[in-house]
Image 1 (cartoon, rainbow, N blue to C red):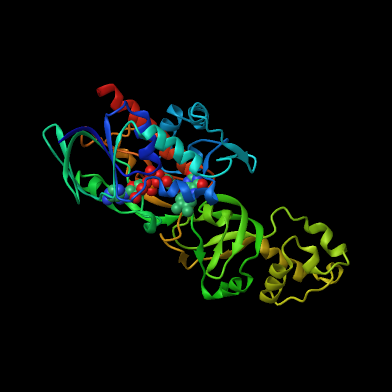
Image 2: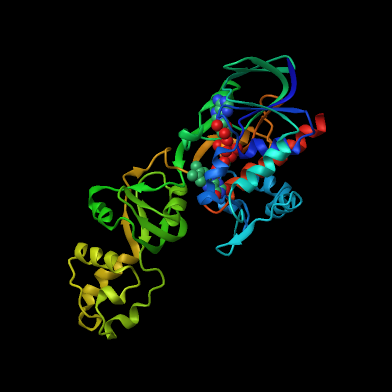
Amino acid sequence: MHNEIIIIGGGASALMLASLLPKNSATVIEHNAEPGAKILISGGGKCNITNVVMGSEYYVGKSTFVQSALDLFDEKALLKWLQSRQLRPVLKKNHQYFCSQSAKELLDVFLKEGKKQKMFLGENVTNVSKRGAFFSVRTDKRTLNAKYVVVASGGLSFPKLGASPIGYEIAASFGHKIKRTAPALVGFTVQKEQFFFKALSGVSTEVEIKVADQYCKGSLLFTHKGISGPAILDASLYWEKGKIEVDFLPNFAWESIQKSKKQLSSLLPMPKRVTKAFLVQLNLDDKQGVKITQEELCLLQTLNHYSFAPAGTFGYAKAEVTKGGICTNEVHADSMMSKKTEGLYFTGEVLDVTGRLGGYNFQWAFSSAYACANSIKKYL
Ligand SMILES: Cc1cc2nc3c(=O)[nH]c(=O)nc-3n(C[C@H](O)[C@H](O)[C@H](O)COP(=O)(O)OP(=O)(O)OC[C@H]3O[C@@H](n4cnc5c(N)ncnc54)[C@H](O)[C@@H]3O)c2cc1C
């Protein structure tokens, strides 16, 4: 059986690609019973589709490679494309675009568009090889031949939603290098010096984190396993090993503190429970600001650069994305085609491109799919 294009995976990137390709030109193979599982649970069920503030600086990966795909299909082009299909994402938190009611709105757009392609669901791709001009795609049900193969099988995060290493295995079998993968946009477990964090489970506070020369601002959430929340998730993108530095009191004006008659737990702009826990750690009493000595003030100011090494992360089971992946210097930036094998393409998270929190990963899935569709359409 000959197909023009086989798309491996039925996630965000594959569904956008299937929508962009001419009718009846592609077959999508997805091993879940339904496509787009991650879309449905993303962004707290409302899917953070993209971001007003877009650019390669919000990604970990080769910036020229990322920018090239974003330039072809950026957030404005994506919004226009969605609007022409009656989906009008709403702006929240100043710069993030979400579905107005539920992530299903986005999936429905793709399911409607996707009708123009064949979709094999509940079918697991096991291997891809190439002989002459044709690829052979083996699944647990059959072998299919195609002129073009697009690997859009995602990363390793959330295995319960179908994540598998097949994309990396296929790439490696065609001689591609894979950058070491790790869970990202994920919480940190802590070492015993920070076990006191666990008693604060459920409390969140505003912080600024410095990690590997990057700054991540936002909420830090204490959990029973360690720490999470938007600022920590972003920090996990840059963290390899070793210490991170958390400013628990960003922009706090210390000058006035020694003039105040309020207790420290009321003075410091953190939830009282957090302040009290840190006071215990610093061996300080919850005294009035006017009563603190210069030495005690210096101790308190260490909270502006509280440095510690996380024990690890919560792992792939909890990670929103996988960092690392197929090395992009072996992939054409304008088309996502392999530089090693003509007709073989990679799109989405399987590549070594990972965005920050805020809709950047779906934008990448869609922009890379667009670049790929543009290239394949020229050959058809
Ligand atoms: C909890 C959570 C929330 C998230 N929220 C957001 C958000 O709000 N905004 C944002 O930008 N990003 C978010 N992300 C990240 C985003 O979902 C991914 O980056 C994006 O889905 C990647 O798209 P993809 O198509 O490359 O991979 P995926 O969407 O992972 O799709 C890959 C598909 O391939 C299938 N597959 C794998 N192996 C095989 C095989 N052997 N045979 C057949 N099929 C196979 C999988 O089942 C899957 O359906 C979130 C992720 C998670 C886990």
